[in-house]
Length: 179
Image (cartoon, rainbow, N blue to C red; front, side):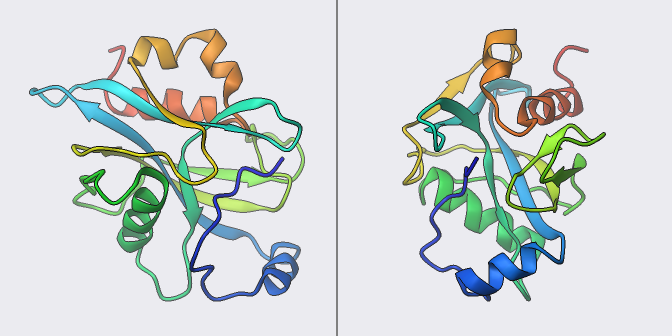
């Protein structure tokens, strides 16, 4: 299943070289769970991207993308937030580049619960508050803002691909939702 966002600046590898590298090396990614906060700093909305997979099924995804050669984690986060949510999203990047978790994706089901049929990937995951107007990326049908209860509902959790529902649950636990 391909949930890749078309990147107008594909970075440091051609498509052929990227295919070759994915077969030999784990790829480094950043993933972000976009959130809106109330005045006290509590999460009151979670943003998810709705898109169609290769079979035409509707799936939910998060902001994500590769870290390119010589790019800082913060620069990669900002680049992918702007690419996936638009230039007016105004993400509030974390003070520290320490993620709330590290997700390990494998091309086949594994003990991690995260899958990406294209590659072995290591993803640094963040909760990123946004304060501006968001527009979904090119391949997304919509950006949906949901309450934490809505995004944690069993029906919505089933719509996430590759185990990302578990990532959203971890993100909200990290943010103190449900405590």
